[in-house]
Image 1 (cartoon, one colour):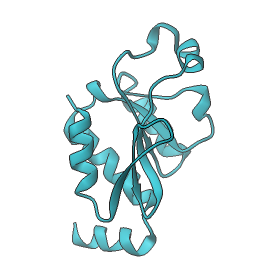
Image 2 (image 1 turned 60 degrees about the horizontal axis):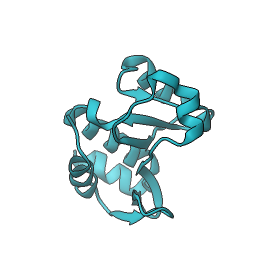
Image 3 (image 1 turned 90 degrees about the vertical axis):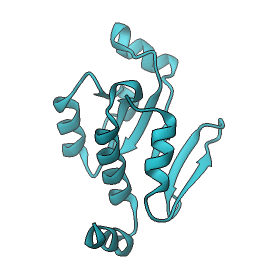
Length: 129
C-alpha cells in the first residue's frame, strides 16, 4: 500500500508543485501556493466522532473538485476514503494512506492537483497527458 514516499514522488512529478511544512511541521503539497494535499493526523474531535472506525495509521487529506466528487469517493471505498465533521461542506477527503493503492493515490493526487492548479497549467497538463 501507499507511503509518504509515494505521496512525495507522485506530487513532485506534477508541474510546479512545492512541498512546504504546515504550522505544525507536517508536509503540505501546493501548486501555485494552493494546497491540494496534506498530512492530516486525526485530532481528538475526529477520534471522538469516528469512534472505533478511526484509523490508527497515517492520514492524507486531498482536495476534490466538489462535494459530489467527495461523496462518490466516500461511497466507492469507505475502507479507504472517509471524512470527519470538521470537513463537512468542504471539498476534501481523508485517505487511509496504508489502505490506498499507489495507482489510486496517483489518480487522487492528480485530480487534487488539477482542481487547484491555475486553469492554464491544468489545461496544458491535460493536453500533454
